[in-house]
Image 1 (cartoon, rainbow, N blue to C red):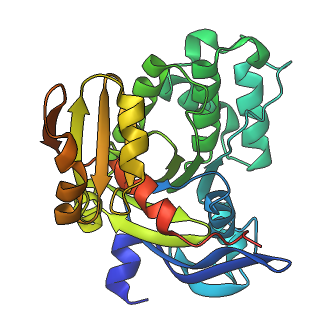
Image 2: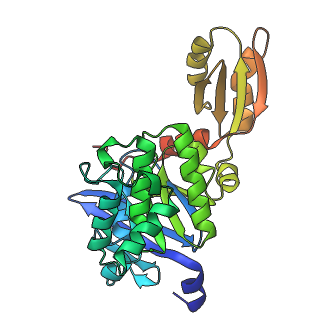
Image 3: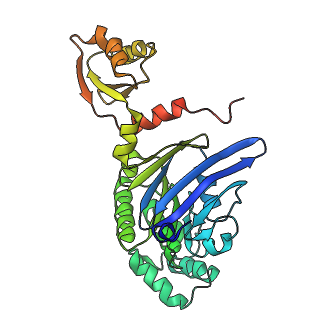
Length: 312
């Protein structure tokens, strides 16, 4: 990697591969994440997202691949990477019979943080936890547990945060507050790689990548990813939409016919063929409107076309 890349890229990896037995769960994935960027890493359950993250931070060794994370070689310098990365797992993994402050102090001890008490106090203040610092972790709601987890990730002042579905099971208000904190931290220079299943969260990222069955299918800004898919989508309202969806799905050009409230979204990667498919139904009582395709349509379309690495 050249000096310019070292200065601008927090993650610069290529061909990252991981196998478990005969299964390839991460298949030659390359990723470039700029310093100070919020990068969304998306894909269905079992797609290889968590495995890829664990390879980045040195918890798993890649079978193939090369590159750097925070300027360190991802294969040979994993211990150096660990000291500068914060990793937030899917599950709450703190001691529920200890207070918020005691949990943070324990994490600070694990990282051998200098001036530990000051570091704990700084983390409490930064995440708005100071007034609750004596509350037991087991008594916290999902949103406050999330704040504790993020505070723990920051205790050793990392340069990169790897957050694995951090808002799963958290209410919408807490999710919004979490993302406001993420953008504030990114403005201060932190880099984020975040896995999520929520499309509204993906749209809050500077750029996104989508993987399915261990393969990288697309990446770029949200508008770029949508444009690359070249999907055409129509919205239709009217009676018996369930029956209409079943009829439309029989047409080979229709990739999706999915209910959204009181409307049906019908998508295809062949605009002319889609026009032919819907033509018999373009009469009252149905009302049709061309709409912009969204991330959800794009990602389902990509997943449907991807080869299943667990298929027999």
